[in-house]
Image 1 (cartoon, rainbow, N blue to C red):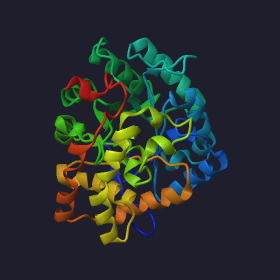
Image 2 (cartoon, rainbow, N blue to C red):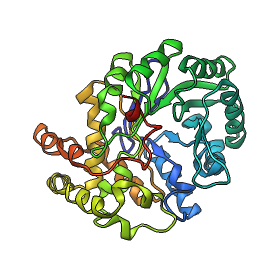
Image 3 (cartoon, one colour):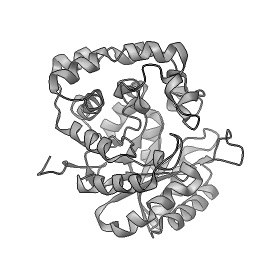
Image 4 (cartoon, rainbow, N blue to C red):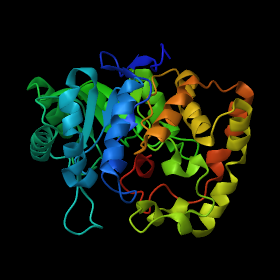
Length: 337
């Protein structure tokens, strides 16, 4: 950290310079139960004070509400932040419906809606949130590249793509960042995408670096503790016997945390941050939180350096996790490896 602020790194070759840890804003609008909007706004302000400059949202979060929530903050700090949003996941009045659209017409429609909700003329980093294999990748990325040429978007990103897909997309237009789930609990991104990103100079932006909160140690029996509005209650890793077995995997995390006078969450984040050196690429995780104290805890992880022995102790965890990341993994990169 420089002074009281976290260090900065560059996303991709020629991409924006951002704090080495970002903030995922999804939970401020839905998915994790009720939100105190005032506390959430305080958290966003605290993040910027700490040197966090990459703020991540998507049109699907709250069906546009999350982008609208961020609008006042973005307006007040436009020149200080890097604003990232995403398109492609389509929702309807059916709360269980999730569609995916990557066609060029939808790309153009989606960006205009996000620009309007965010109250900006240009989006700094625009991600394709999920890949629809029925649409040629060159068509989707080509349409995104047209947005750059038109001045509506500055840099392009992808989410949940394989290494081969990343290479194909990068050949159409430079990709600044790949956002995929990556944590001590979820390492399938290392099969091909991490190597491709390192080769191409694409930054990795891990989402859910705390395993959706599981790596904090707060879910000894997650299925009983989650509220009715918390979508983790539908996720295989958070239910029944899986939750109990996975909680037992946290013992090495707690051991390392005790040695550093840190929390399990900080060790889990430090592990993700340290993958930058392990794989020789830029890594900017975006842990999500709605509370200022958790934000300060997360940022504190950037000051922790894990030894080779500690990394070895943590290494086996992912291979022992029970349950998939999602009830339906068909739209993730793991399904196409």
